[in-house]
Amino acid sequence: MKNPNYKNLLIEWLRDSGVSEVISETRNNYYLQQLQNKINQKNTETNKTQKILNLKQSNSINSTQLPKNRIKHDNLESIKSLEELLTAIKEFKGCDLRKTAKNLVFADGNAKSKVMLIGEAPGADEDRLGKPFVGQSGKLLDKMLSFISLNRSKIYITNIVPWRPPGNRQPKPDEISMYLPFVKKHIEIIAPKIIVLLGSVATKSILNVSEGITKLRGRWHDYKMKDRDRPINIIPTFHPAYLLRSPGQKEKVWEDLRKIEKKYKSIVETE
Image 1 (cartoon, rainbow, N blue to C red):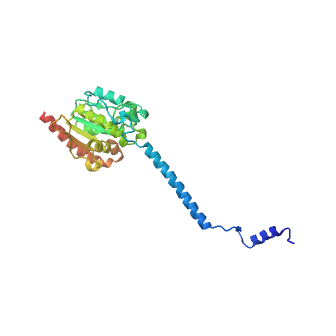
Image 2: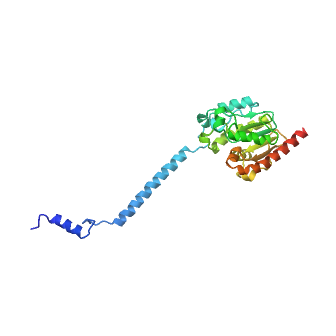
């Protein structure tokens, strides 16, 4: 007859013997279980990844899914004045930037100027006041222009994107592509002799190139317009906001300004 305390005594004996695990009488292939668990975990991760990819694909932008006003800029050909262009931009609802910005930032300066400057997008100060380059970068730009005897009464300035991106981030490619036709119409109306592209976004957008601003700055390019015999002289340079972060690059911008001054004087003298 077994001792009624047999189980307790056996457990105590096993514990005193250093046994820390109880092995079941049923055989188990723990290696196979671990392998199956890894497979199940991998399948779960794969399913999650596929769901994310499907979500991204469903949210991706293509020309067949976009509303008409996001892929077609109606009546741009018929626009002949800045007032009409401003109205068209105000009525264009294809870009969501207008929902987060306070004010449309159209342009500033002399519309009859021979020099047109094109920046990237409005910042916080520009968004608040509705004018381009009025913050710290704007003050630096005014100072830069003063070195070559130019000011806002002698130049015309605008941006690639007229609404401030949230958090002062760079405009996204699709946002740029939506407003680029308006910018080109803007250039057509102003018909400047010189265009200064401020920063990488403006340079890549207008020149349709992939090279960075460091490589392209300080070099003259041609911008051809239909119904115009001579191309417009275009020169990229660093954005004033970049110079505030990297003051060591001001010397290079000074070189660019001297080139602009020389070109401007040659144009004025021949007219």
